[in-house]
Image 1 (cartoon, one colour):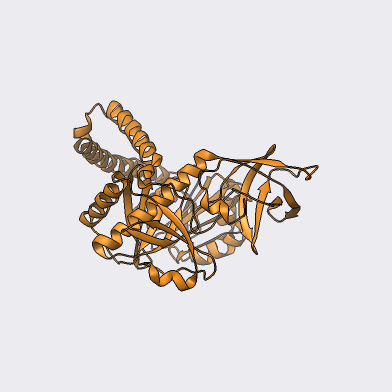
Image 2 (cartoon, helix red, strand yellow):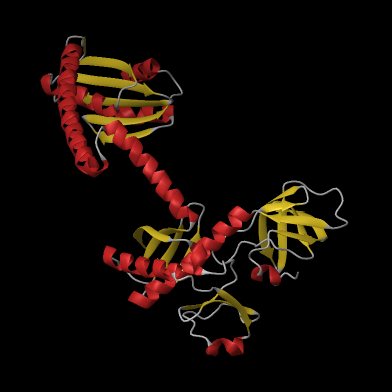
Length: 397
């Protein structure tokens, strides 16, 4: 079997070959085989995996015309005949997905005139980028319906090698990027594509196509879908999730949406109520600090160090205090994990510029912040304790 033939016999699971070379590069150890059935990454399709003798094939790439088969560890002896075993489950999945992409791209072109400009086969789903700026659900369902009809009709999927001179004999939607040994994948009277990927013999083996979602991407539409066994996997996964939700919410499937909407509405009401209660508690906390101030020359100092509090809470406490006491200077510090934060505020009477004070302190904690003369906030690293930071602020007043 030649390297060219590994494109043609997509159903080959076992083959025998010899190793021409074994080398190591930045990606690890690899071997070059005399003949191979392992498909290398290319054309939007991932590589095959499998076993070569007793070594697992982890990656297959074509580099400068050389098919490199990356292995988990080098062979001690590369002489003799080696058996290769293709991971058939992975190979057949790629065959279903790639053929499904051909069919869906052809249906978008046939029904709506939307051409596919790129394709990616991922581990969970596929995407195609359509050369259109918008799409609606009716368009997507129309293309999906035709694609599944083509699958049910069990049309043959043929491959053919041609020359560049023969290209005009076929109604290709896109001119191939190669000019030598051009391989066509053909669904007669429906789709003609230059492609080097692996495909089944019939559209029926694709099983089914289901569009999942789409989004705008760089002026085009990126469409997400699945084919074949992945459709069943998606159905099983989503059915299992829905079953769990119906049990957790104690609501039948048909009432799921209104039930969740009511829960979200109640949650928002509870959040608003909690915010109101939190505001009341912060007011009481601020009132308590008002009685803890210590008179200084020209102002009353109120200070406190906290753990695990939000800086927003400290802001509200400080703002409440200076609104009540025009002679107050409030210094509040909090440590959250490995981060120190501070809030400093003053009433209308003190002449201290808190912004200048903070700018002297921030470098000590590798931090930064901002504000104005009467109110500053910021933070940095916990290179000192919260109490030490608080005393440093006091000393800078």
